[in-house]
Length: 556
Image (cartoon, rainbow, N blue to C red; front, side, top):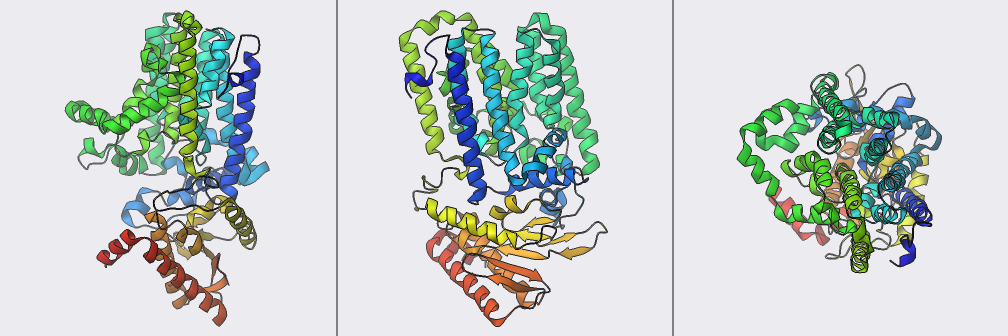
């Protein structure tokens, strides 16, 4: 990182930030498109594409992929259902905004939307900074935004509904700073409609307005009231219309330690937390290693300045509390979407701190330290290979060694395109997770080997017309990743069982892919190919992954 990448003065600060915005958009969009083409994108990418595509077809928020994650399927061994709406899991009405672009660009639209929104957030952060700081200092903060793993990681992740959160928060704060009611009001209205839990972030912003912006205190009170009403209505009345996931799945997965095995909604969890303050305190400080890593990653690109900012702590207080008090490691993973709850408060809080300490920026030692922090943050963001976006040049695992060369990734991407072109666009399909993003523009799509059957609108059980498996793809990662090893073994057994039972025939088979078709009469050659591919890849898995092999033997 050299000086030319950071503003040297107030005059050219805008040019520097534009360079970062454009470069970030081009590079990250290209990596996202490469992830999809090279089969490194996975399940969630397909869920959102199918959901938005179905909305375009007059079936709002419908997704069989989302149905596979529903409480009945996960906990009661039910089958996925046609007609299931993703709104049961997450209330995301703003996704409708992206439907026209999905109709125009298809599978390639979501990367452009996601990266474009986050890049726009960086520019809006710069505009916010200019309201309070000299252009040069505002530019440094904005450039730092594009170097942190907490921004780069979520930008490279499978498409998610939170990608618009930083932009809306920065626009809201820009409206306050420029005293433009409409600029404040529109993003404030939209925030709880991004996703049901964004209401907590919205409440935190309102609380910050009450405490730190006296002239906006009444608006802050109104925002808090709106956020509370929105969260209660959405989680307790609207989402249960579409399914029981909010109480039966999500609250259990993230807050089961407070509910003692009972089901419950948002209010039930809050009451349970109040009754168990010691448990809440324990959850907040453990595990200490991951918590410290999270805070360092958040603060590092800004030279740890936000740690001294009251505004930053107020703005991130509620989402940070939720992240630290919930079960599971996802909420603390610095490369996942949940970081976008915290990023706006950290960067905006830094602006408000510098507003009172502008003279500190003249200190050359502090500037040099900040530059060093930016370099370290960007380096760790890159070598972390977030979401396998850089797997073409960075190995997925060091010990054991797993690296698929860029030429092989490019070749498998081309072959996957040809493979998918052989499947009719309106056919029902069950496919392995890495193929799902490119198959998601259809009404019925399932993840194989977890499912190949579904219930139609009349409640009748149906078999997917096509099943697509690529044992060699998963086998190439199986030495280091048990879930890939498991997919090879389970897929192979299911493929052989379905063909032996006569439900499916081998429609196509080679060393790269196997396609079964319902009620298809296969040949001796194609059946032999199936058996050989299953056997070769299963043996490979058991040979290279001894731990998985031992676990498999014990389970028998």
